[in-house]
Image 1 (cartoon, one colour):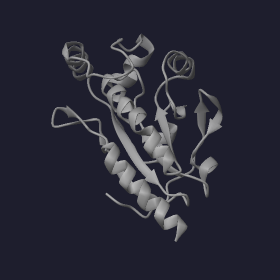
Image 2 (image 1 turned 135 degrees about the horizontal axis):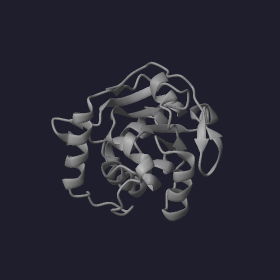
Image 3 (image 1 turned 90 degrees about the vertical axis):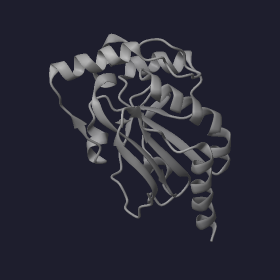
Image 4 (image 1 turned 90 degrees about the horizontal axis):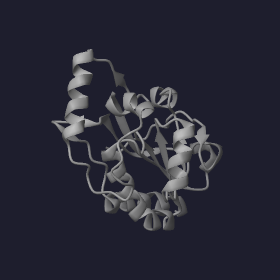
Length: 196
């Protein structure tokens, strides 16, 4: 879906440095802003693997990926020190930025969460470059939460050029992010239009 709206600016704690957000890139770089559960989520690890592999092509188009996670800062520091993450890994554990961008978190009964936990324990972890470790106990609430993911491509002016958002699970399967080819195509359009 293509959009012409501008979303609210934000800044989140960054594991690799000070707070960071889209405004830090305004007028300089196109952006992929990806709201994810973080490395604690096995399906997010698969998506991260995809983006890490596509990162050279993405950054060659004068673009950056901002991964906005639900990971607490201390756990995020562990991940960044143990894994190669070439793009900024931002922390939004209290959902404040997600809420401002219109992403939802739904509440359910204890039985619903127990069923989700049991199902999660039985699934095979998808192949990825970040291992098969289970989420830490502190990550379990956000990993099990029925919340929305968001994947947005912003041009240098901060205008949303592509958006995909909604529940992580759709029809019993994890929602997919766009392919690297789709991302590169949209970023190329952004870059071409910025030089016109």
